[in-house]
Amino acid sequence: MGRIKLELPNRFDVYLHDTPDKALFGRSNRHLSHGCVRVEQILPLASYVLAADLSAMERITKAIKNGDTTTISLQRKIPVYFLYWTAVPGPKGEMNYHSDVYGRDRRLIAAMRTEQLRIASVNAPCMKG
Image 1 (cartoon, rainbow, N blue to C red):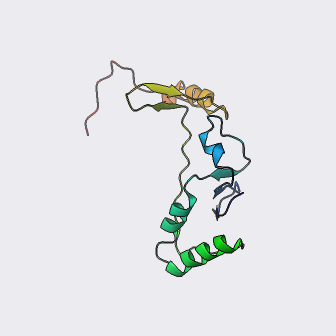
Image 2: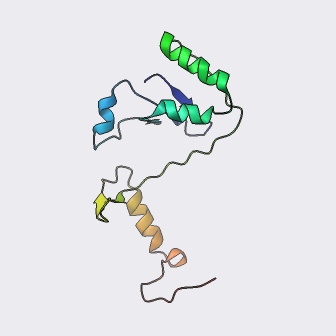
Image 3: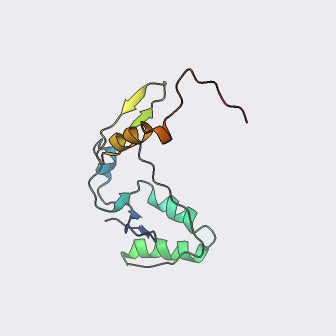
């Protein structure tokens, strides 16, 4: 699993962790897990999350060095957002498309076609607030 695991209180039991197999970050097909998210730069993230608690960061560094397991509770809530994009703009404005492994695009397109959620047509005037 890696050196650090950040547990998030949620009903899906999703958590963040690094991995000893760093080559996995170079793969284009990375949906290999069940309920966890691999984080390539986990130590800077842990440092940010624990920024107000220097002793906790020291405990993490020591635990990693010794190969120990340590649990540290956060003193504050940190919002975590997961974004699932199958179309991502590239650095030159081109679109890069990725497979929709969870089938969300189909459901989103169906929802946008319903009368209540119909997206304005291209010819519709812009609304200014």
